[in-house]
Image 1 (cartoon, rainbow, N blue to C red):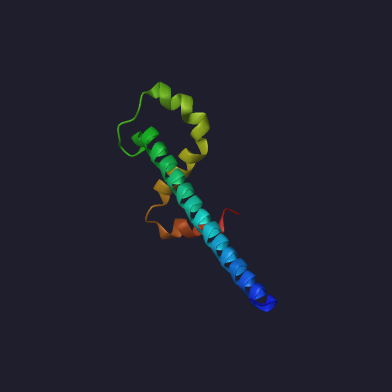
Image 2 (image 1 turned 90 degrees about the horizontal axis):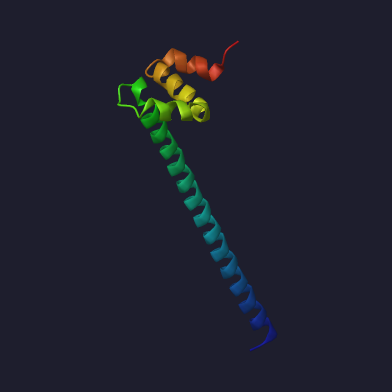
Amino acid sequence: MSIKDKFNSNKKVRTIKAFLAGVEIANRHKATDQIEYEAREMEHMFTLILFGDAIGLPSPPIAVTMELLPLMKDDYERMVLRATQTGNGLSEIASIIGEP
């Protein structure tokens, strides 16, 4: 085997290794994105369970709700905002533009 053949062989091996490394990185990003999506959905479900009385669902004991309320302030405000904007195209446009 000549030096040129060895060089080409090493180059092919490096190319294949680089390709496989890229595939591995892509799979990690895809898995991470999926886990982040599931975590967000679980947070949304938890918020809905905790503050379900706003839409007529049975709620947990008030002591639990009041204890978690300071930690869930942003989620509660987001939930109320979405509930008030449902089906109202003008309010959706206004929320995109922002307040003056």
